[in-house]
Image 1 (cartoon, helix red, strand yellow):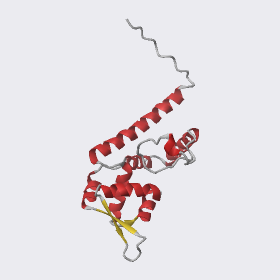
Image 2: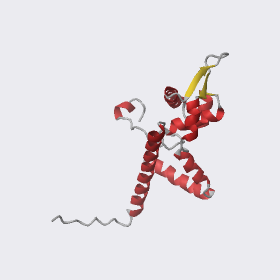
Image 3: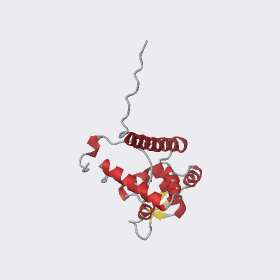
Image 4: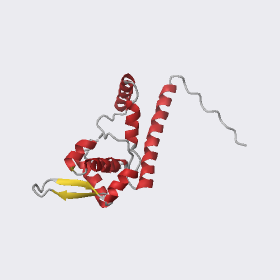
Length: 178
């Protein structure tokens, strides 16, 4: 017979920290599950969907216009657009007057994908946060900013969307100042 040991008592001072860590884990898990479900059901990632919807909304735009609209760096955007183009969801066309400019436009398949895919998680969260009183939004922002500081993550690249992806190996980060 196996004797079950009772769980060690949690000091009252640790209870808030544990609750915060549990909440953080639930948030991370929700982001992971949302990203996986979107990829499995629609064969598209959150950043790809955000870009595809922005391209669909404008009809035709440049990569710099798209970068400003979705708040992604040009280097991040290139990879996203490459994958959308490889999937046949967008086209790139050089400007006839200025060959340096490249226009992005959705394909028919891209228009369909943008229409049927669910709203990205970060947009649903943003909408829900927008419905909170401004004072509560500011309290949440301050608390999360403090948590970022505690995690020493102030210099991490930030993207205004909730998405998960592969975690780079330490050797892949060499020379990036991390």
